[in-house]
View 1: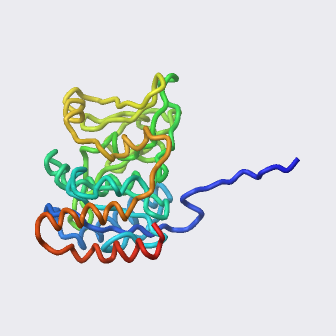
View 2 (view 1 turned 60 degrees about the horizontal axis):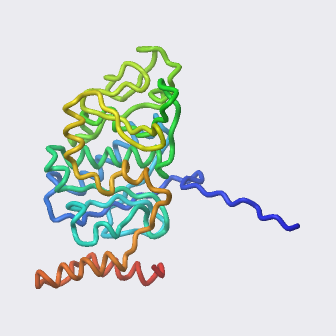
View 3 (view 1 turned 180 degrees about the vertical axis):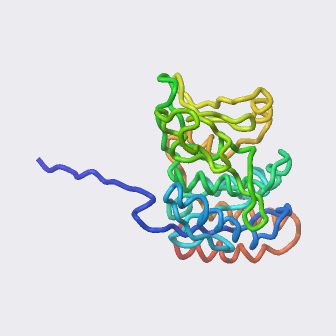
Length: 276
């Protein structure tokens, strides 16, 4: 009887990913976009890659780039076309979204949120890595910035998020025995700092655990649509639908009685060349 060989897939096949970064937000970022991308590149090169072995090349673009991962800056989840970007690029590669207006409303910096999404995407591009930990009844998600997300440091003068080291997810380390995060504020594996949280799987469902009641209260007030914590709950991740994006953005432009933005032409070209 004929047998079918299993098919395996992975986002990283030994190549350094290119990450296309493009801004669809109308809300000011609070920082020059080119300077932000440059700082994020330095963040990866000098701090993240030496620890996690996850190099990447960031490029500024006006839309998706064939064969590249993506970081998309949007106003919020209600921006026309925002949800049509879905979970993956049109090629089925990893992507992250930075919701600018939502971030600012929460009192956070866009640069910190963007670097947060970047490091977590590099460490766990498929949003499926998890591990055991101090509680044998709990599985812990490999989220590298959540436990320390209230802390930041500057790269090229621009604030970037603190992040945990691989040792953070290794429960055999004794307190204070090794470095657990870049800023050296974490003292032991799986410790959550006061402004952070941790995504866990317990009793058959995903949830969060917090180090402080104030963080839990703030978290519940946030608009979490299309965040990694929500994507982790899905059985499958969906590719971006650029036809839906273009239709929504064109409709919004028509409603404002202004021409479509120049970036839509690049979206249309990508739709025609990818067959999406």
